[in-house]
Amino acid sequence: MTVTELLDGFHAFTRPAHIGFGMVGLLCFWIPMVSAKGQKTHRRFGKIFEVTAWLVIFFAALGVINYLIRFSQSKFVLSDKLSEFSLILMLGHLTITASVMLYQGRHALRYKSNVKEARTVVFLTLHSALLLSSLGLIIFTLKHFQPSSIIALITSLFGLAVVKDGYQFVKNERVTREIWVYAHLNGMMGVGLAFYVAFGVFGSKILFDTNTEESG
Image (cartoon, rainbow, N blue to C red; front, side, top):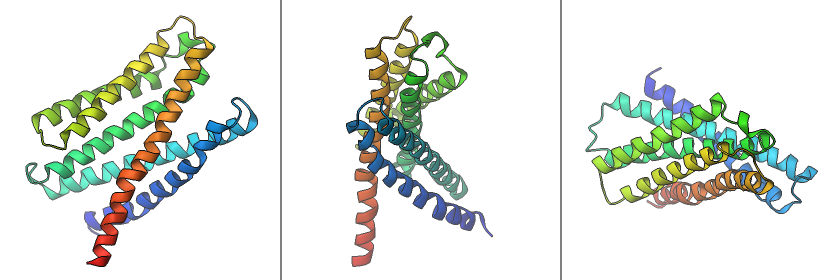
């Protein structure tokens, strides 16, 4: 079995899993939003959404790694595949951004009573990864600028804003209810909206490409 065949089989599993869990996330997102906060229904479906979101992020990360391996195997010339490679880098950055936002949403609940312990190894690792990813994407985009690069720059700046929000939360001496509720909702709503954006942009592109191929 060749590397390409192995990657094709791998992708055939990870892509449907990513889309499937994403659909569950789309459905579960609104129940905690409209249900009474802190009640059983809110906590139950909030947990389902959180687990689903981590699975979506996990399979997205595997998908990005898959594409990066394909690029390295093909020994491509960057100028010939700049748009495709830039898209993969942006998707990788968005995957890291979503993981940090999801972590922030849960992190706010876990440390709302003892924010002094909130600077955990996981917190520092995730936020450092997002900071480096944002800066790296900005440098790459400016070096290889093209008309569509503005989207990558916006997502990079958004990543920096997410890092800023995370550090603003942990620098508080004491966390009020308004602060932790904002951090929690900001993280969870951000991930939920990311689900809808990803489904609307990339999902519609896949459906459009599929329909175009069938009609052709």
